[in-house]
Length: 520
Image 1: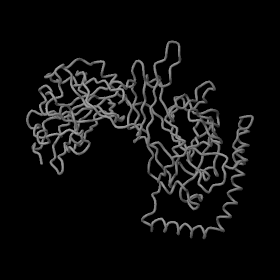
Image 2: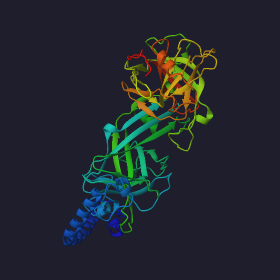
Image 3: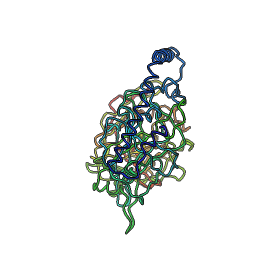
Image 4: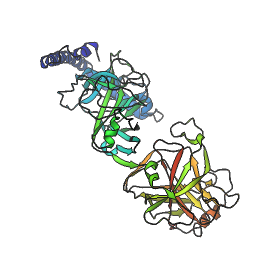
């Protein structure tokens, strides 16, 4: 934004109606004068620009070795930054910016944004000028593809948001994830008090409001850059997690507790940078676009904390019945409590552990009745599915299938769990003589909210050479057992909200397979 235009949008000493009218009038005159000058220049250079644009278009399609769009966007071209054509960059948005005023604004058909003059620290949001930019709405939260789940116990509240923002404009956008901040606010239309925190944790903010004053909003503006190009209609996705512990006696509760109690609704706001092009003149402000969605309610989700309230011991040979779900309570070895999904520098680990078998109220997961063994070369594939029948969203962190060749017996000496392709198998049983069951744990996990009545499953390649454990497995014996005394069981890991040292595994026996049990 030019220094002249930014000064025109600065607040007056008095915030009355006359002052606002004065600001608007001066800004309008200056913007119109600049537009007339630009239009005169464009008329003189119109033919040249069209010719250059035509050359660029032809060049972009004739070279099959040209780099992908995301790579090109890292070094923006001169032609792409021309107003009205090509990719939208920050300098174009600032040229026609208008001040955004909290108490009296009606939402126009423009893009909400902020302009930050200086960089911020990663752990604290700072006040930036609130603006309307562009000639149309450019970014919007896609409500149909944004999933928000809430877990609440007597000591912890956790909100998981899988958000999607979509380019709803008519031109491509270059966005900068380096300035990304996901905010969950409870009173989005009021000005936050000076005493209210502005702390940011892992690019997330929670509080009463993002409004720091009637003309300023809190935002992150970091020096790092992570560019992503969005074509019209395409989307940017991410996830954010908010947690809050129960307040101590006499302390004010975190706003997340009001959400958990249903006492208030929330507003989700995703802020993401719009960088300037490489050829732009030095700008006095950086642009950050905003997209918001009012959240009337969250999907109530259950985790291991909720299921453990009904946990009772289970003995070998007992059947589930209609009102309970088989489960295993496992201690997670210390070295496996970090996820390779979150940090790719952590080496992969996997091992078998002995777990306490039990029952929890249920059923929670049920066999969909579609399991089948598909013969193939070089390996057969076990296809299976389970359905969430709990009536609530279930938080999962891992899925496996266990094949026991002699499911009703005890584990023979020397037998253990190993991988056959992507399935966990044993030539005898997972039951131990001391009443425990063995289970296969790895440090690879993810957070996946399985909605009520939703189905999830897997395709297990029974191939010793893929992800094997360097243990010789008799493939024919394992596959052949599924038609006799063998049992395939879906195993779903359900995490605890704030206890990585334990995990609850839900076991769902799969019905006899619907295909002949023959090895290729």
